[in-house]
Length: 307
Image (cartoon, rainbow, N blue to C red; front, side):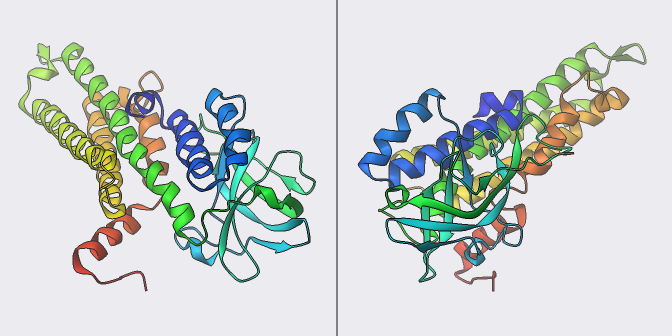
């Protein structure tokens, strides 16, 4: 994820969704039949997926979702809408979260072509332009009962997926920071002012030295988190801290790198402004910067500031 986002956050978003938000829930919560049916083709890219959680009126509060399923014999009837869904315009199978008639959140797999299911694309984005974004609209969609995840109910289902994706983002954002740093360093060595490269001036060296220091610190944080994750000891709060820190580091580095390039930094000849615009989405999606701050606050104080 670090290397993919070093290229572009939108491409990393596509990969994150496929692995962490589509394959993971099928693997973790799905039936053996669901795993055999979907996972091999998702792994090869023959099938592409998306993740339906966020709604027009429920972003940071996913528990308030209104998308719902109703039992109708051998199938469920799905109604509702999701928005800001990466990959939705081309996804073959959305993993969707909806409330059943008892109010419990359930996960299910919807398939392209089911009557009443559509995916309007979101246009005029200034961020993540390399990533296809859209909606998921469900108008009395008949979903077979075998498409429901049997092994999870409640918010822990989608939040478990987001933990996987947020860990990937914590690496990915560092990649964007690395590309901004590399671009600024190369430019500073080549750009001559007052008779010498600007890399020789103290303030430019201060910027570059602080960039590589923050990148290294962020890498160490997520590397340690990965070690804990391999041992099944990583907590959701630790993942929140890493996601928030990595994106903040990346946005600050993008801004400083742009300054080193001066006016050239705003042009499409360099990648910095593209990273900067992309990171404005990354700092908001899969838990906003402020929500992750409050998750850390709750973890250290034991007090829930969400209510």
